Image 1: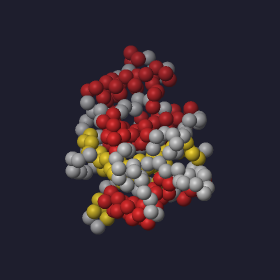
Image 2: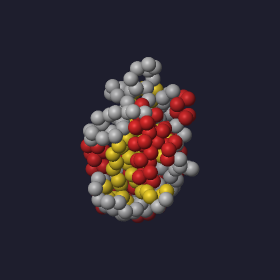
Image 3: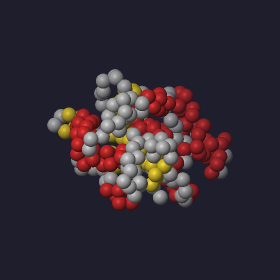
Image 4: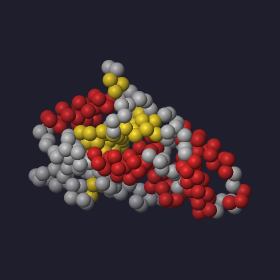
Length: 260
């Protein structure tokens, strides 16, 4: 079953045919991985620690995982929360970061955090069609299981993580315009945002509503990472703590971040 938040502080199920039609979006369902194979989760976690790209299943095991939330995580959460009450059709939050600093990982952690409060989705960056993408995002915003009633609207938190440009314009600008056109075409009125774009690309942005992620881990973040990794080793009982090489933790972390 795939479910997403409803406007009534509950959840609704995404019809299979609609889920299949949202081909431009990687939707983070409210109930994703609530039931699953623990051994599969461990395998994905091991792959991640070896440098594989982050997957949603890695975040499902966050409490026992060596995953560390960057210092900007809570600030980014609060910034998005403030945006949810802004009286506009579309708004955005930009995360500026240097390549290899874990910006993509941080953005996915933010979507995971909001999956039960907002309709969270990541743009699939393959053969990007901004008009079709905008149509699908509005479909997600309006989704309701009930026929012949007012749509069960809920703000979409849309993760855009790409370097691409169209006619030398940032993709975000193009998507913004297409979303406005689609919303107006459907005569949608809303007092809170239909879409919040989490604009996450490694390049320069204006500083308004922008989070800047430092390229290196702080000492506190490295400490937290070591503590979590040691906890994971204790849980798996792979080897005694006394033989654990702390230097390998730091190098392993740097290799993993460089792939995010």
